Length: 270
Image (cartoon, rainbow, N blue to C red):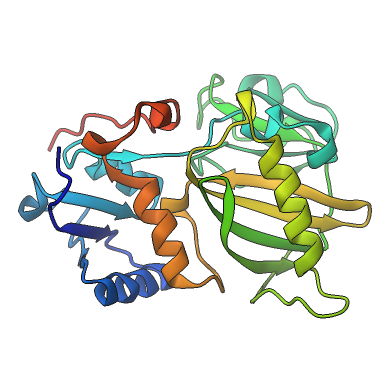
């Protein structure tokens, strides 16, 4: 066990704005923040107590060698939620099946960005077999227009930090407002309903990101993602750091209840 050892927050080489904020927040806590010079596991961190913030490709490149446990929602999380919180039909299927569709649908890979997540007019517009295998899992959902979208960093089943990130599909980052006419109170109430519904096949890891949106018909879940690979937007960086540290820490300290959410990391040969 590594408990008691000093912790290091490892940041991907291409550090983004959230990474810079987390580096500052970590330093204020007395944690070491280390920006990787390359896409290889830093030699000086081998055997150390490491947490990670970076994209899926970086986690795959260094995770196994550093003994990391990156947690992520199950591929079928969105499809497993009740219709009352998704407000649309969502199906976890394969890319081969999605290619046979003849009507418009929003299609995305559940965890990795294998191709652009967007509305496709039909299955013929999706990446062909020369680019991606047909057994690649994808989420296919009815087309919904979100008027406003919000990012929630969730820790132990409660919202730990939140921020708006889009209006009418365009980037529009802002802190939450709670005054008259603001979305904050309704968002909080809907978030509580969503997290209460996140049980059984729709369970989440103890640390994750959930995106929610307001439509003309009401509130709906957009998606869930790994906290260690998600932007913080206008969220409090200290609160985001809490979630990130839990979401991608040492495998040796991972509780057994979290193992179903463990990302499968490849063996990397240098």
